[in-house]
Length: 122
Image (cartoon, rainbow, N blue to C red; front, side, top):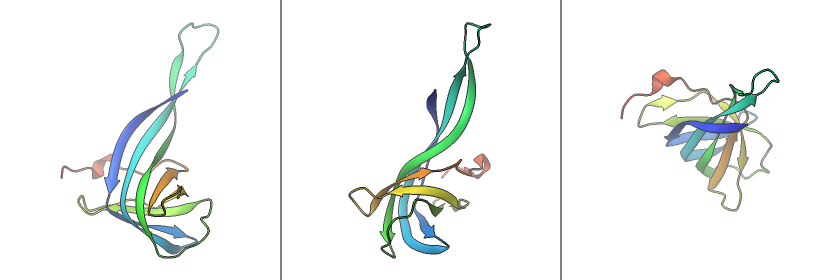
């Protein structure tokens, strides 16, 4: 199995929510969207068939905490980009704050809901 980067997107706004309450403001974010590919082999064919698998996404976000809480397993992210006047659908994510509380790693627990039609030149 291998993965391939499909798309890279970024933005300058958003919020982190937990149980419907905003716990942090997102100042800047950067995400790469990937697709996993699986090699399927059978005894009749010596060459594998490549089958697209699930998509995933991960990236960084620079945030300002409104509330200091013990970080839950999953949060909801509402991301936007004012330069393109885009607001993405809310997504479920995992946040890892690591050492720096203002720079966090974000990972998607499902596909990132992106519509290619929203991309317009800056």
